[in-house]
Each structure stands twice: as C-alpha cells, then as structure tokens.
Amino acid sequence: MRPGGWEALLFDLFDTLVLFERERLPEIQVNGRTLRSTAGHMHEAFRPFAPDVSLEDFVGALFWSWQEAERLRGESHREVPAAERFALLFDRLGLDAAALQREALPLLLATHMRELSRAVVCPAHHRELLVALGARHRLAVVSNFDYTPTAHLVLEREGLAPLFEAVVISDAVGWRKPKAVIFETALGALGVPPGRALFVGDRADIDVAGAHGVGMQAVWVNRAREPLPEGAPRPEFEIQDLAELRAIVGG
Image (tube, rainbow, N blue to C red; front, side, top):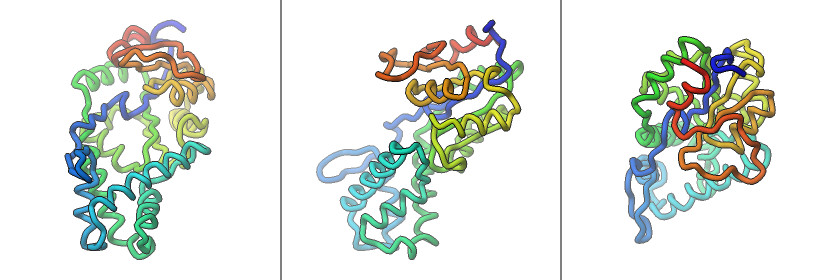
C-alpha cells in the first residue's frame, strides 16, 4: 500500500503514545528491599479501613492480586477491571470485600491511579507528530488497561485527547487485545474497514497479532530492537521511534 493510503491510524496507548517510567513511581522499603510502587501511598490511604494490616502484608497481597489478574487475563484475554482486582486484594487480606466497596475501593483506585499516572510521560515530539498525522488520517486509541478514567486522564493531561475520534479501552469493552472485539469496536466507531486502517503498537504478540486477526496491517514499535517473540506474527513495518511513522504513512 502506498504511503498515506490508509484512512485511519489506530494506536496502542501505553509504551506507544505515552511511556511508563517505573523510576517515577514512589520509593518504599519493604522487608529490607527498596521497591518502586504505588503500594506505600495505597497502604496509607487504606489504614483507616484496616489498621491491623501491615505494609508488608498489604504489599504481598497487592502483588498477588496483580499476578492473579494477569493469570485470569492470560486464560481468555478477558479484562479484569481494577475494581475486581482490588476485590481480590481484600479477599487475600481476609477482609470483607463487600463492606469495603463503598468507601475504601474508590479511595484505593484514586490513590493507585494518581501515582501510576505520574509515572507516565509523553515524549515531546509525539503530539506534534499526531497533529500532523491527524491532518490526513482519522486517529483512534485501542488500549489494554484496567481503569478507563486513568487512560482518559493521561490523554487529556498530555493534550492528546482532542486528536482522537475514538478511544477504546479494554476495561470498557471487557476484552483485551489480541481479541478481535476491541479492534472491531474502534473500527466500528470510525466506520472504517480494517483494510483501510493501520495499527501501531509496541507488542508484536498482542498488537500485531490482534490487528492481523481482523485484517489490519501493523507497525511494531520495537524501541530496543528485540527479536520477534516466538510465535508472534511478523509486522508489515518495524520502527524504533514513533517519528519513523511519517516515512510509512506520509504526513
């Protein structure tokens, strides 16, 4: 397909449009180890609801809940929303999840997502690039993320939200990439057939595979020039920096 021949460009969000930098997370000391985690702020916010839960126990249960959510996601690509994951956390701590849903859960979500979003940055040249691409293409976001409001907050904070006609988050759809439904939801919102759309993402096994599954071509953003993961489909295009997209699509 000639450069610029696509009507729509669909993008992954985290580690594609914006970058997650773990070193920006708060530092905590747990069992003699230094960790970068939202857990310290979350534990402090949670203490009024469960004063007997130590930081060490909280961190252990939080990490377990993340592993369990990842296991469940891996089985079927069903999204495990953040609220469901924190219910797993409450159960792991031996607490009454139902009793904590009303006040503790919203506070934990707000605290976790606030600190998490602070570790997300948008490279300066990305917005300029998207403005240029948006002059010739329709733009959308398709992201695996377990809490829709934070994804929108990041897009709005970085001045990217007005550039996209559709923002589709797995938390809202219920299914994660590479499931076809999340890509089809975005294409349906744009009214663009898959053959006229190009997907851009940093995971060959999820982004490229999912895009190919619905008939889209794909760009793999491979910053570290890592080998193609075993079993992952080969993308039509591979780049190290989003700026290289200009040469592929024009604009």
